[in-house]
Length: 262
Ligand code: ZN
Image (cartoon, rainbow, N blue to C red; front, side, top):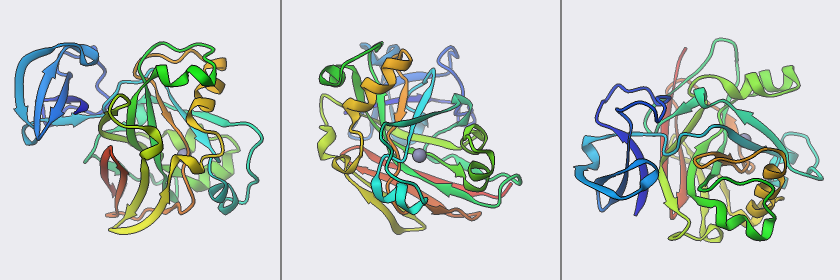
């Protein structure tokens, strides 16, 4: 079973919030989407085939918390040392894009990179949670592409602009619930135009997911639906117009988006 947010309106923007009556929640089983109440409460009885619906980003986060330099080899490829504590930053919810949506390149940047990442979706309000109890707060896992204007990231010294363009946060296609999939079994792979570019397991993270939840929730209260992008492994690289990025997590699913010229 997978958890989805979806709509029957093909053109509904990926950034449409839960307050819209056009946004529905549901679960997917064998190619059928069964509608549920908000946040995957009980089923309503309505069902569609997966092909009939438009999948939206699978959660509606009040904030998207990202982790920089959480894999040693990636820190090194960027010319940085492994950090002594997690480096966190935010992406705005206005950057969300759904599975299949275009990544809109920007004329303000001459180097836009993909970053495949394991996304952790929060299931319960979490404030000052010790690492030992962090798993109680995880709803599930999803695929994230932390698209980054690398030149602007270097130039600005902080990352809000480089990471914050509209469509620079594709997420999806759905959430694999933590009750069904163990974090340790996830395998992340990023493909660019069908070529394998990134490959990692959660065991390679410098700060594991429980430590990240403890660290972040010490600073800010995490709300149900909030998304943590846990960092990208080595192998990031530039997108050109027309390029297709697939972020695949074994046991979760595959998020596919095409870069489109500005
Ligand atoms: Zn990242």
